[in-house]
Amino acid sequence: MSKDGVSGSCHCGAVTIRLTERPDQVTDCNCTQCTALGWRLVYGTSDTIAIDGELDQYVRSDMAEPCLRILRCRHCGVATHWEPLTAPPHDRIGVSARLLDDPGIATLPVRVVDGLSWPK
Image (cartoon, rainbow, N blue to C red; front, side, top):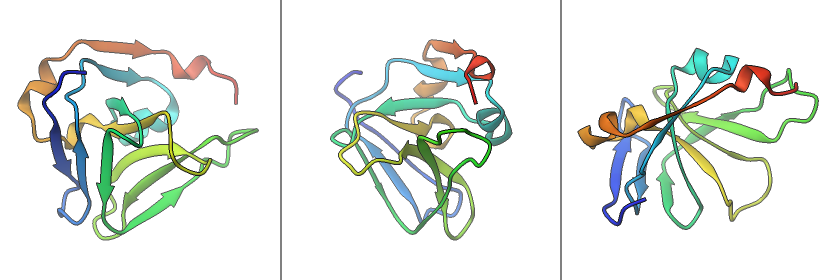
């Protein structure tokens, strides 16, 4: 990640996202969840990502051992990010790159991940 931060929000603006560093790549995962959400993700930690606003959560029920929650704006319903089910601080948080205001995000290299192959 470079030093310049980026920010964004959900559709209605009630949830704000701030990354203290600009990501150097975007991840495109083909798992059923990321595909359904239309997600391309960037990653950071609890120290490099600040998300504020009223959020609801969803934990996948089709996983033998769920490990993360999807968070979405309580007002407009847009899924903003995922985080581990463990208590913070988190070593890895995934944020929807499509919600970030920096047009340069679209030009970042894309890492393709075959999430469909992961065990359920």
